[in-house]
Every structure is written in C-alpha cells, then in structure tokens.
Amino acid sequence: MRDSAVRVDTTSQVPPYEQIRAQLAALIRTGRLVEGERLPTVRQLAADLGLAPGTVARAYRELETADLIRTRRGAGTRVAALPSDSHTHDADQLETLARDFTSAARALGADTEDILTAVRDALDPGPAFSPAAADSEAGGPERPGAFIFDDDPSDHGFRT
Image (cartoon, rainbow, N blue to C red; front, side, top):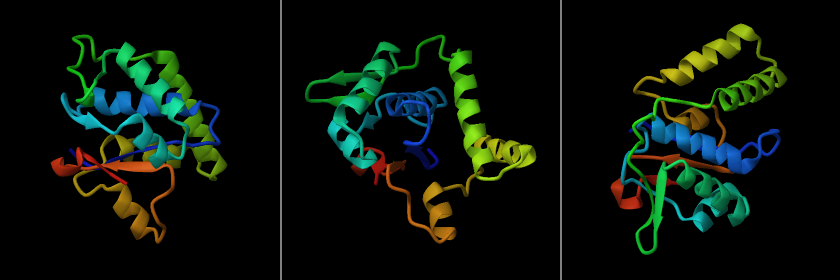
C-alpha cells in the first residue's frame, strides 16, 4: 500500500466526522486499506487529529453501518470485507467533496488547470508519492490533524 494521509480541515463546511468517514471509506473502497487491517482506536485517532472522541466515534459508526469496518471487543476496529456492490458511490456526496476541494483550491489562488492537474496527480500519484516526503521537500512539517498510513505491520499500518 502506498502512503496516504487522512486530514481534517476545520475550515471546511463539511463536518469533521464526515471528512473522516469519506476519506476512510475511499481508502477502503480503493483497496488502500485492506480487509482485516486494524484502524486506530477512537481515542487514538481523535488525539492524532485533535478532535473530540465523539467525532471519530460517529465516523466509525457510519462506516460500520455501511459495512466497511467491524469493531469487536478485544480485537479492535478492522476493515471489513468489501460489499459486493462496492463500486457504487454517493453522487451527492462526491459532488459536495468536489465543490469543497474546488473552493479551497481557488482560495489558494489555483485556476481551473491547476485544479485539474492536482486531481489527475491525486488519482495517479505514482510510486514515489509520499505526503510526508512532499511536506519535508516543501520545507514544512507534517500538518497537525493528520496521520499517515504505511506498510509497517508492527504499528498496525499507522504512524503519526
């Protein structure tokens, strides 16, 4: 699995729980988080993202309702087997996410071509892509409110 980050933008109109839910759902549906992979506890993820535990708990509940994750006492929260209709998506939700991204990109001064290039790059980041490396190459530290997925099984696929 290539590195990818889940981030919460507190300036977005999309509620934080929904940002977490949508990003984790996308990582699961695209296979970047695989069946059986363990997710951080609600408290750990809340601390990593600087959010209240109830916010993360709501995102996890919605992911469980969608049959994307399973929580078992003593076994933690793990990625569930993908439903057979896993290639469907919520068009309204996709439109909302696209609108939020476009608004944020325009606020940064990006024009239409810049935005389309960023989306194309995000869809096919290539083998050298790493958000952590991109942050360090840009001279900045990793942003607060983010955690990084990696392939090290000793830390359950997460590092902060």
